[in-house]
Length: 379
Image (cartoon, rainbow, N blue to C red; front, top):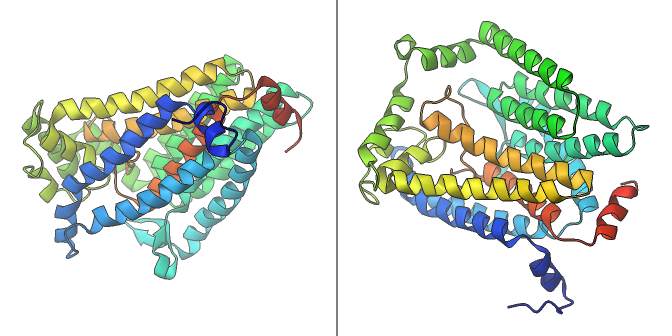
């Protein structure tokens, strides 16, 4: 154990970090590799790759993610804001670049090819940076009404989601908008505006339903199975029934051999078949612990930026997990959204490492004077 009197950076980090959130996040990361060993090999074999292709790549991504996760957790709130601004500008430029140079997959341009480095999905990195910047803007608007912080927070949303809609990527658009609305509410703005934003969101969804064919198709398939192909969702639901409470056992599942996205969007269903509903409930509990603990810490924070930043990052993490699991259970229309730290994906894993690193950095215990001193100075 590290002594409280240890003056080193690691010593100060250990005694200031929220160890409940840290432990739960590490448990999720380890679980992700174990569960990917169930869902990844069949997909790799179907694609003509080595059996553990996705597992091996995920381990490499995880090592990089862990380094980013730990180093980011060492940051001060001011450094979090500055790094978030840099990441936001570069990743948003990357999202715009996908519109012109992106690789088209399933009718959407979301990926940029970086030669030997492989492909990257810039929209994944927009999310944590956007949340931090929106929290910063709302906090400044609350703390210093003479500054246009709230106006900046309002402008950030269309600047961010318009390029995503053009890709199109309605999943990330919905996720970012929901988190922004949560920050809007926590910032204490009037109910009139909250209701108005809800109305705008409903109108936007109606327009997307009317004008975007694949959005219409997904909603109609969700409402009426007979209106189109529901193979993936039906198969995912079947896996919960076949797995029962305790599952068929590691390697005994059959659904993963026919689900195209068994290692990404539908890994929760593969987990249900092989390890059972009990393990799925344990995963839900891990996600819930992280979100509820973060919200508890945020509620006690006196610094408006820390309170809003932690709240936004917790909502981002929790809503993304909820969307993935709800799609697997056919509780909402199909949407390509990874299960945090469980699904395969380098961009997703590193983006989540940034988001949770920011979360740990903002939830660290600091002297009151230090926290408010940083917020009070211009960054």
